[in-house]
Length: 286
Length: 286
Image 1: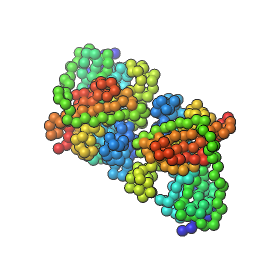
Image 2: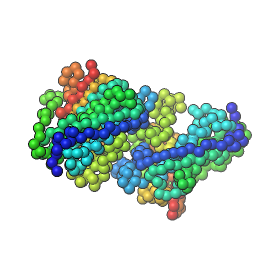
Image 3: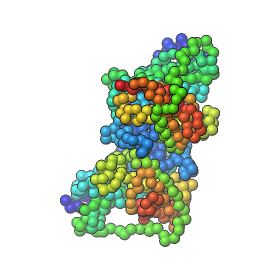
Image 4: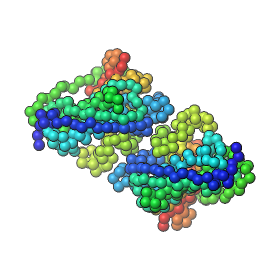
């Protein structure tokens, strides 16, 4: 079934409520490798309820369920096994992020591009507090393999290329063999990240780490290198998912200060040398 | 204030409801180190919702909140900072353990002994399913330092001494530096296990692992060595807490087959050579 852009863009997506507390915040932090001294220089800051801070990248968790709304959406008839998470943008619109609350996620389709080999769906989601204040804004870029060629626009080119010089900062984080099993308790229960049979169906030799778990690791690296672990200094992050991490591997985040409020970054897997995050930037509140 | 045995024994304790689902079961399993290949030969058995099995030692989690009922109980006026968890007995009364449910915990005080240096309170707790079927039976042995000398009976002697020969089976499990931070999400939020200031007040150089987290590790060791990771073969476990594990240390469980249905065991910390679990036995369903 071809993509029907007009139909997909005009059909509304339902708001989705989300409730969380400090245990969810801590579980997420442990899921993306926080709480491990000496690498984590603020071990308890994100993992203990007294004085608890919320990691900025937690902002992708509340709207995650909105992704399910794309399955079966009018004009977007596709095979879920062919969906790839291409890019992620997250902006924190209110700080400090509360350690508990009831939130409302308001998803909408921003654009659908024709990439030839596939269709690229940009799903926006505004997450508001119960008082109607904007808290997070996300754009999930979803690549639907095999659904291109419907005659749409090709969309913007890649941005945030890493500079051709040595990084200013480099942080290594070794993941746990059980990292994906832990991360999935924060809401993404896709069996691709646990079950060898599903991993094989997806074309992987074994279960892979969630892209958004890798995303959380690189977010922590920037937070530590440029924000002194103060989430209030972290404004937004955008990344491209270029490759997969196997649980247990080491994520190396390389960072370049581009200017006062912009850090460019990329990440690779130490054990295999492949890039896993590219075309990435963090904006700081300065 | 001295212990008043008659008053304490005659005052009732309230039933406590407990609800859980597969995520709680998996979180507990990860909290006691399951899901780590190759040590865990059944990595997904206890950590993935498809075909999920419940670790027998999960049986201490539902009644845990009943412990709080001992604080302020009539006849038991003591300083909570002086309370030590001395021993634990757990029997699984129904198998398989459901992966979700609503349970009712019915606590009662079995006995109070005068140990000279302290009072020993045996808190029983029967945990039933919503249908009124017995699921778990626990006895928490609570040692109240400084509350002895009230003229009570001294109670039974220690049992389950480890044999004076080489163990039949030995299993090493390395804990994570963040193990206590993860385990506490299963319900025991005592800051002693996270906060260096509380640890210092308790007389420890840094936060210690929960005794029941160590308990979970040794339970897994027996389950693997003698039950082929089949929880249905695991009937009961009794341990004495002899010392503390620091998160990140390695727990070595030594096991002896005493007879067809009894495994004797003890556990020590590899890095410091001290015993942490002694006078311990697991009964098997044969």
